[in-house]
Amino acid sequence: MPGAARSRGAPGIYGEVPGVRPSALHADLALAQGLDTVLDYGRRNHNALVLLQAWVETPTWTDSENFLNEHDSDLRTPEIQALFADADGPIARQHSAILGLTAELPHDQVYEIVTTVDTAAEHAFTAIDQADIPRLRHLPTHSRPAQQ
Image (cartoon, rainbow, N blue to C red; front, side, top):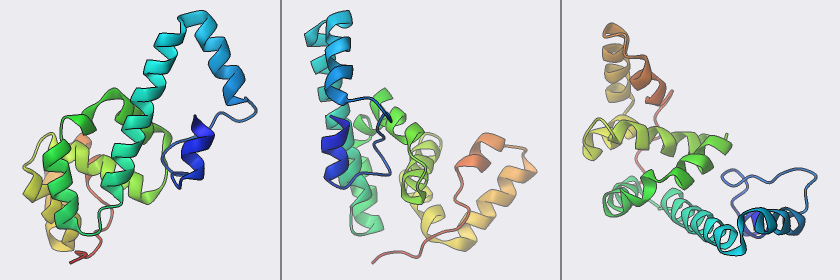
C-alpha cells in the first residue's frame, strides 16, 4: 500500500494518490479486475520499491555498481520505470539516468561519468557534437564525488 511504503522512508520514489483512500482504491480495483490481479500488481510494485530502495541506499559508488550488475534485469522492469516516472528527487533522477546510460554504455564507464566531472563534461560535449539528445538527457548535470 502506498502509505505503508511512504512510512518506511521512500517519499521521493513512491507517490500517493491524493484524496483517495488506498483501501477504497484497492477494493474498487479488486471488484473490477479480480483480487489475484490486484494482489499480484501490489506484490510486483512492493518488490520493485524494495529493490529500488536498496539500490539507492548503497553506501558507495562501487557498491551501487555491484548492485546494478547483480540486479540489472530486475531494475529494468515496467514497475521500476513507473517508480522513476513518479519521482522527482535528485537521487531518483540520478539513478534513472544511470539505468538509461547503462542501456548503451558499459557499467564502469557510466559510473566514471557519474563520479568524475571531467568525464561527464567530455561525454556531454560528445553528445552535443553528435546531436545525441537522448544521451544528453541522461547525463548528470553535475557529478557527485566518489563515496569511497
